[in-house]
Each structure stands twice: as structure tokens, then as C-alpha cells.
Image 1 (tube, helix red, strand yellow):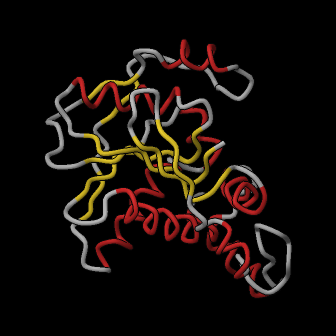
Image 2 (image 1 turned 90 degrees about the horizontal axis):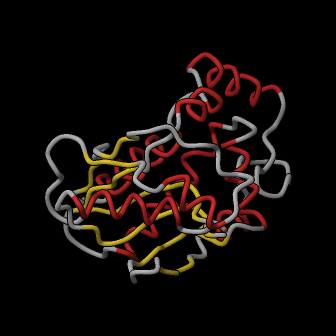
Length: 214
């Protein structure tokens, strides 16, 4: 979200009390039950066994919180999601240095969301980890090398075909363990393509981190 709109949202919140983006309960941006819901944790894996760690399943309050950020431009919810991601990263890679590699975002998505949401969540989560003394950073080394479609209406096979070969590593590969970060994992097609592209460039990928898993 552009800075002016973010500032306007903060001013509006002073006039009209906040309501929870997860359940609509008045009083705060994310109530305690919804905060717990988005930090419940869910573990799955890609077809090759690469672990995928989500903050929560893509339903209920967690889904609503993510949609509030993606579709309703509630930028004040981003810190809630970033904190949840930081907590789950500790489950995926418990100790040592780690680099978050955000999945590349289509230009149309960046326009509609006022910027690169996935990269922003990665930066926020890394800052949270550093505040706790962890050596964490963000490496935006993955790039789109061809056009891809919006995947909302595509089935699993369509999503795999849509992103096949779409990502590539640019610049020097990050050193040490890396974790691919996305906002939601559904069929795993995008996450798998990101992992493939990184490993093809010699990058060590320890897993995939996401807000929700469908």
C-alpha cells in the first residue's frame, strides 16, 4: 500500500475503532483468538520431500487475515502475518543463519496490492528474527524470466504448466541455508518451481515457508 494510504488508514483508525481482520470483532486489528489461529502451524511437503511450513491452514481466521492484506488493503495486518512467519521459521530452521527468498510477484499483482507483498512480509519477518538475535536476511535473487498468468482459476496441472521454467536465479547465489517464502501454497506448483530454480543455481534450500497452506 502506498505510504499516503497507509497514513490515511492509521488516521481513520483513530476515528473509527479497529475491528479484527480475522473475525470482525471490534477493538483491535487482530484479536487474540485469531492471532493464535494464524500461528497454529501446519506442515506438509513438496513432491520431492522438501518441507513446507505454513502458519495455518487456508481457512477460517487465517484465510481472512491474508485476504484482508491482499484484497482489502489492510496494511496494518502485515506485522501480524510477519510475526507468525518468523515463529514458524523457527520450527523449519531452528538455529543458525538463514536467508528468506521471496517468490517473484507478477507486475499486475504488485500494482493491485501497492507493492510486492511477499517481499514485504519477508523483510518484516527477517527484522523480527534479527530483533531476537537471529542472523536472518532477505535475498531477492529469484526473478520471473517469462510472463505467467494469474493462477486463481487454474487447476493443478494448469498451474504447473503456467510456472514451469518461469523462475531463474540472477546474481550470485546466496550462501548458507535458504527458505523460499510465499503468501499461500495451494497445489505447490509455484513453490516447487522456486525450489527448482534455486537448486539449479547451487543454492541450499531447507524448505518453504508460507502464511497459509490450502
